[in-house]
Length: 202
Image (cartoon, rainbow, N blue to C red; front, side, top):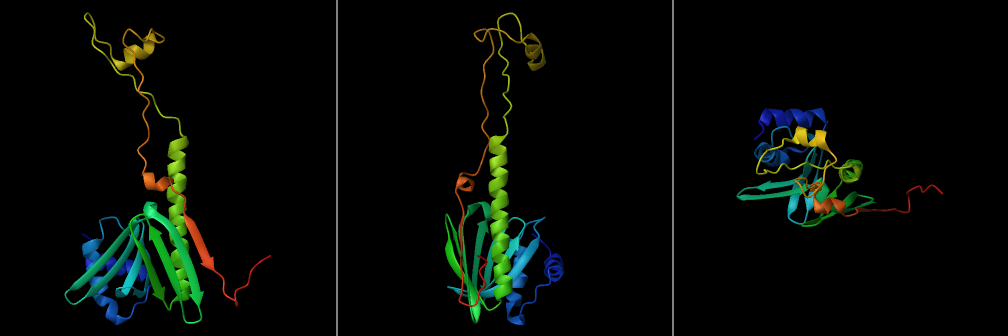
C-alpha cells in the first residue's frame, strides 16, 4: 500500500489537474497501488459505468470509479493489451481498449490528454513485445545435471573439465525454455479515426 502523500506528489509531478469531484478516486488510489508503482499519466472522463479516472503507471493501466457504497477498479497489464483504438470529435475523444479479458471504452473532453494516454499505452505494449522477443532470441544456457554412480559423484565443474564424454555414462541435456507470458506473443492492433479536419501527410 502506498501512502496518500506519495500518490498526491506523483499526481502533482505529472501536472494532472482533476475536478474536486474526483477526490474519492484519488483517495482510493493508495489502497490499489503497490510499492514502487509510479503514476505516469492520468485523465478523467466517462466509461459505461459512469465517471472515472484512468491512470497509466509503470506497471499497468488502472480505471478507478468510486461512489458512495460503490467501487469499480479495472486493472490491465500492458502485456495483456491486444488492441487500442482512438477517435476524436469536436467536443471530445474516445479510447477503445481491448485486452484478452476486458473490453471497455473511455470518453473524455480532454482530447490531447487522452491521445497522449493512448500513445503511452502503445509504447508500453511495444516495449513488452520487444522485451519478450529479445528473451526468446537469446541462446539459453544448457545445464549439466550430475548423476551418482556406484564409485563416484562428479560435480558440475569436474564434468565440464572432462567433456566430451559418452552420454550413456552420466551426461544428459535438458534445454531450458524461457518463461514468457503467452499473451505477449500476440500482435497488438492500433487504429485511429481521422476526421475531416485532420491533416494527412501523403
